[in-house]
Length: 406
Ligand code: ATP
Ligand code: MG
Image (cartoon, rainbow, N blue to C red; front, side, top):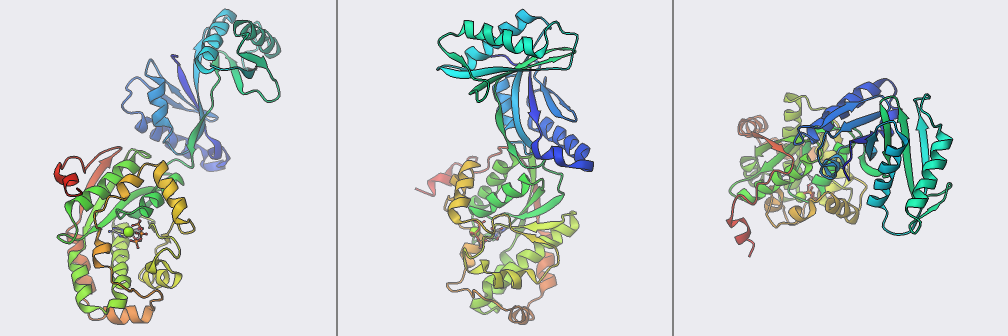
């Protein structure tokens, strides 16, 4: 079926009052970004709907990309015909033939903004309903209350628009409308899911990833980058900031009692993420912590770690069970990557029994022997920033990556 446009409905956006225009413009930009590989597509964000004019581009492929854009409630592929009843019948017949393969119920629902058209909505509903019944006597039955299929007909000034399918969009708010956040992205299961949920609420993210060569491999770094590529499917592209963490981890391991290794390391990670946020206009730090999941994720521990900053530390998966997080990871296709067994910098330096209730005064005391500023400055001097695009891959480029797993 060759469609002419995809009609996009906003959902939650339409309740945004003053900000509505800003949200709609942003959504328009994000949709254009998501569809940049279809050069003939034109995107028109309007107050009530957004129209994606296909100009001959493949509607199935375009819709696959639209499904990932946050801020879209539902969308429908639409056929446009001349203002002529026989053209309407032909198009509606083609829609039904395309979508209905077993007996079902239907109705026709017409809206008319051009009141000069020869048929009114009542006549259109009745006549087109009857003609479709005649065309598909085996398949269709009318049900005006709860039809399985609705054929929408919109009679506008410039033509008649028909559609019969409503496809669920990604929901949420357009990425970029909630400001920028720094996402602490490990190679694990939780932080990519937290990143997805933050973006879904309109946050534009930059990834901060700590790595500790030679204790962690090139593959661990490549895995975090590839996860970023998966997440960029939802927003076009994401900056990936890698921060060398070896010197800090070695120093902390040497100078801090074992029970506080984890806490002090985490305090450094957070300080570094905050410094990057300050330099790059980030408004908050995001991480993948879930309450009670491991020793570093108790409230006492969060409090002691967070003491180093007054920037908000936001935890999108805080209240999720592991099984719920895994379910989302599978849906967004990060799970298989996350479970690849490349050690990240925390696993390597995790003590056997970290304190589950670390105290602020103790953490401060143990840090007194460390040159915090010097350690931070050297780590920050070594950062590398890569712009990662939707679907970009990093693991497969290196052929012996998988050999290592065998
Ligand atoms: P994840 O699955 O996200 O790794 P986790 O359950 O394994 O989470 P931890 O390893 O304790 O938990 O990490 C808690 C959070 O700290 C992570 O969700 C992530 O936001 C951050 N974090 C941990 N390691 C790193 C890292 N190497 N680089 C950046 N952030 C990290
Ligand atoms: Mg982890």
